[in-house]
Image 1: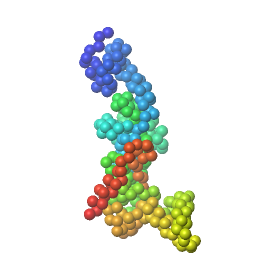
Image 2: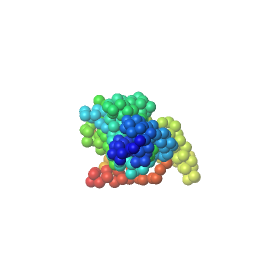
Image 3: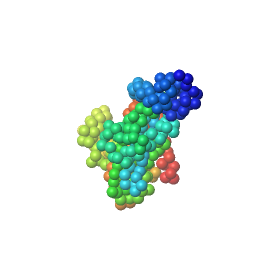
Image 4: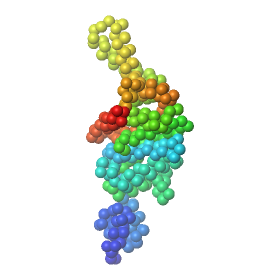
Length: 295
């Protein structure tokens, strides 16, 4: 049967598929638009599965806050290129995923993927596959964190590439945001020394001891050298031990103590962390921005 240009145009607008694919789908569907949409969806999902093995290390970090600022979600949604990360369709999808996390508090990534993306009823995972078919790149919802608190919640997002949530007891929202910015720039491993594992400390102690022994100094001097290195190491990896990024003359511990506050926990998420990709130093970018604000 004859397929009109108007039909092809409508199908392209609805599915984002190519002109020839739309024409063939309409021919196979005998001109029925809904059947053609379904055929393209099935075809598109098959293509999406083929793209699943491709590395997706670009994308967005999205933060969603509740109106009362007592709950927040941070999620990483990946694609293959920065070009796609800037597309409205991709950004809309990522933001809807963050809203779904905040609204429904999924217990796992698998549970999140099975949830409806929005009121349309299509699941987060099905919508992901449809977006892959439309855009032509692999897309993944990689990870998320959800924070709920009766205290103070701070959030900081740097260029959609680093996201931080920090939970505090006491203190102002401005202080919590400053602490979140510091975490983005300084990459602490944990809040305080009690959260550093004994295995990590022992590993560092062995490394420092091996280095110190090369000095040829007496054992008691070496022991003091190692203790000093461990103390410095703990200050570097713990949030409260670090010099505050906006005022390096004071530590985070002194800053929050002065405000009568306590940092309870934090979540830090950096785009593509742990995925092999081209290196870009966003941490230095945050550090420079934070120090400029502190002047």
